Image (cartoon, rainbow, N blue to C red; front, side, top):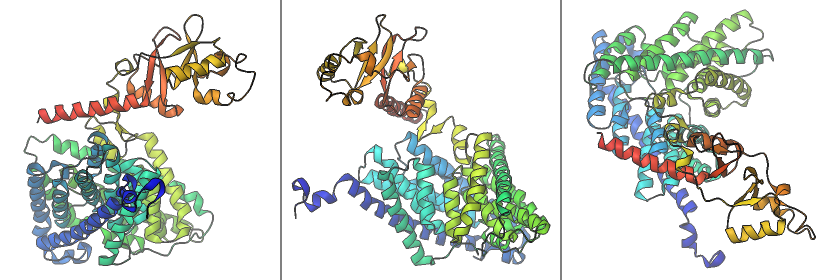
Length: 585
């Protein structure tokens, strides 16, 4: 039957917003099966290296010492070859590459990245690399989303939503946490909580989770302890836990990139470096098998109070070392699971000391280990909402929400004050890419307002009556009128919204003048300001354009600058940047 305005059912189903929902489901299906395939390949790789797929913490006594040292090195060599000669994007933890693709390439990711990331990460983790599965799945899912977007010729403005759908699906399928998957994509990848982004991302996340649960069941990766608040005094301890987990997160970020610098400085081919890192990791693994791979077995022990205090403390630093060796040398894997591991050990140790001092007023150490997992994740990623929800979804206990909020927010606020960039955006900063709100600040900081502004502006005198102001709006087709005084200096701005309230007032057409209507608290820029400065002022003030003044001459109008002009200049700069990058290869 025809719909509104004569539209058929087919026409309504092919509207862009409806089309995006169908594509989101397709992305969720592909990413969900990508997670299933990735998990099976990972297990196959571990069997190939060690002839066993059990958690290494339970079988390490059966593995010869030489194998513990040699196999991570062999895995590193394979990964180094794949990354160097097939897809460099597969190196590291993956999420920065996705953020960079959205900010600089309109969400376009090479199609080969998904296959390369699946293989490289499976080899890294299967051979013993101390990293997580979520980073690879974010990049795999995002690559799938980007490929689908390119296949169906989705406009660039909507491509980041397609990429976000893939990222959400990857996280959701990996952790059996659909809500956390959605928030991860919106909070970290897309950076926008708008309705147009929210609906497709939710559909992709739910679809991927459904597929994952069909194959692996509806259960978390961890053996979650029963959680409850023993006394109100505990609410004073969780901010302290937030500070502690924040410090651990800062140490992880700093040490990780320190190792990356050391390996980068080595005067040897890049494909050999992961093998060296793997060999060093094997030595660590031989002494502390708890840090092998993702480390779920050790995390479960910490959550269920099955570790001694000294081992909990030591494993925090050993995991930082192991993960930094793996990623710093060029291995492939995520930082999310290592953050969970460090949090479990940190919280377990904190809870053990606290419970020994105040046994009647505190929960068992496992409860603090569970909350601290979220604290370290929040402290590294600066994504407290994602951290809170992923732990909440894993535990399924509402009473954990308040402790999680206190711990995660404390860690995030403290770390973002000390260090502006998260563990993800730090990697981009090191490449000279300063990402904020989905943009590379570096590009806009090299463009001046005078290069982009419009010099053709409509000005009116302060004494112009309302009737003529209305006539000016009609004849000039201008969204804003600039009010100037007798000396020609800018004193205010009038928009059509400013005169709407007095349009119906009879007898005021000649009484009200421009000076009475103009907005006098002006947000302005000068011709010598950068576009990033202009964009910051437009964003902070909530306006769509700002007047441009001549520097050093108070109030002298030079032109106007719109947000759309900044967007166009940014997109042009991206294209030039990409052309120059391709020509230099």
